[in-house]
Length: 402
Length: 141
Image (cartoon, rainbow over all chains, first blue to last red):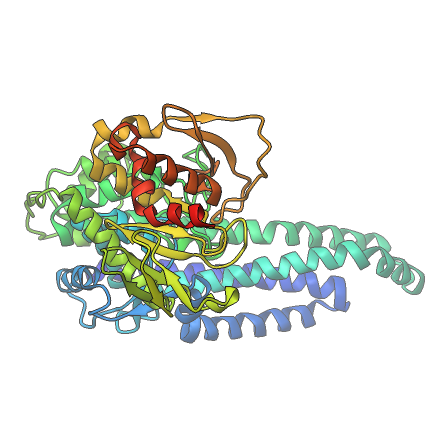
């Protein structure tokens, strides 16, 4: 397994450097355009890159968690979720329990972030928590745990922050160019003597670079995260000995219409299923952050056992390519599949939904009134807006003092 | 969640383990899609079946509302077999909005019938019994 992590790390470092090169190229052209000297642009880009890397390394996880509006929970807040995370922590062999976060969002998704295995977090939307049964939840948490175990989290967080920087820089540069470019170009022509043709070519190259930089950065980013998704699927199947759990969870995720509210271009690759992708988009499109879900489900369902070898075989059959590093396959013992957990009754499903919503109301400081008639009323914290001193239970008509 | 009519935070009423968002000011009620799913699951397919028949309405005098979740303009529809209850549905499928007046109408209609729930379809019967006290209120006033 170490080899898989190693190959992952080496490839990721190359990609972070590549992202840096794209940023430097962008800085070069921006410097040329606006500061009149490419060196100044390069220096600025280098400084920005260094700062962004430092921030991404030390603060990336908390930035991403706060952008998504995630809240940390403890073992008593949601025992079912905490329990599954603990199970997956043991199955994956992680030393430290990752922090568990919940995002108050009806959309179905989850992600992992962090610096390394000892500073990691798993976040899940309340919608997903409500919809999944235990096997499916294990599959999803196993997938996120694999991202932590395979050291994907740091590089994915860093890439997210770097990509964000490049997108923002290019966006501002193109706006500045649009609104002030004409005026500046005019003054330069009058002061500088000859060599106008050469400058024009550089200008054209700079503009092209500025347009292409974010696209390139995105492509690199996608390439990196797609391979990781397959590997994390493979690990999840191994931790659970039950690939069908993840497959069925992915099916639910793919068929849900609601997209994650707080997701944007930079955080999209973090999620289990791309939250920005529209329904009916070409499944094989290059810009899909995650491999097509249908393909991931088919590979998981084609597995004869739960080992990496089984995943490799199923993947090779589908794509005529390899995915799992050969060193991870050597000496791996066959892992039999386990049986499905007993199906949940409807009442259990309702209980799960209430466990999750109870937690969400508590976290948002709603006040709870239990009416003797059996109805439960929850008042928003700022109920003063309509100045009520008492609340009438809409079911039985009893009046409760507030 | 904010009331699409009054734009204030709504109260949450949990009745028979199903959550409904209820506005204290206009008495309108939001029935979230995930809660609706739970209700239909507990009721079983045979009872829930007719409840899901929504008839789209193109012309109506009632004011248009926006979905409290996705902010898209909701569509008007009538619910149930008799087509008497006018509701708003989110085009994205986030849920249903029942205006305060419609809710009181449901409750009073149900209260008039001595046999109660029998001939009302699932969702309407559920709303009627969850907000049984809302009807009394309007009769007094």
